Image (cartoon, rainbow, N blue to C red; front, side, top):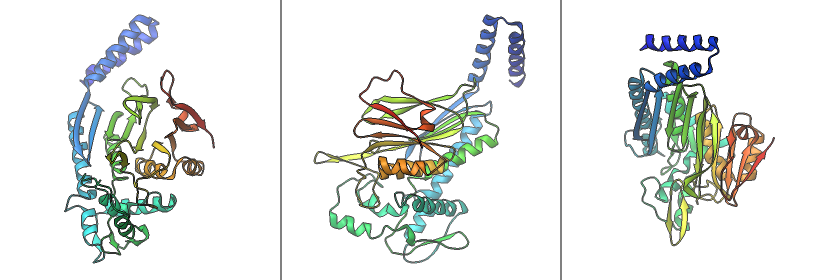
Length: 356
């Protein structure tokens, strides 16, 4: 197979020199067909979401297995529902004793605390008792009473998650708990992308629910295209990204929710109130080279609301964003606007670009 690919590349180069457009196009099509033959796809369930992976590499079948095993390994560390995970053990020991953690879990907890501080608490992994109270942890939804919310909110405080020496951590109050659901998939995207790059993969796409990791470009050298979903219509999209080597991660109230007495309640809980965030936003998409941070920021900026989110972006230099508001605006930061197209979209949204 390698010899055949080399011959096609050489043949294509010869045709470029000849100046024959028709034969040059034919050679390019032959090369693209050969690359497509090295396409491998998989779909699996892990981390409470559907994971789709596409790899263009002659070792694709073997690499898909490595990707799946790596994601399952990370789920085994970070799951809030698996009894033997690092996070479940930490939560079970709350108010009792320190918990020895893997180096990865410890590092991700530290990163989570740093992002919590950076975002002024809009991202807080100790919100777990409140998320569970609303029924989102085990998908047993109900609207809790204010008394129940107040009691659960008393256990939300990232300052009481203590990071001790030798990869140990401690939750100070019994009943406290952490949930890495708003950052773990982004971290998994980072890990898997690094794994594939180290294996020499130059073209791959991994989708973990609302998290998209783009490795390199398409096999023909063109950019990956990713549609940004319309939060009001699951069959529609509001625009297309054209990107390479980056992470695109979206959070929105339309992704997980339930309805009770005619009102919709989504899964993104505001750490300040204990209720689903009412920020005026329908979704936030983060574009970054850091999948871990992008995942956390998509949640944090959704909680912040438009004005605070844009102020936060203006004081940062490591991400871009597209925010969709409840009043029908699609607002792209200048870096995102450079790779985001909405031409030809027929909808009721208005499109804006904001600058620093």
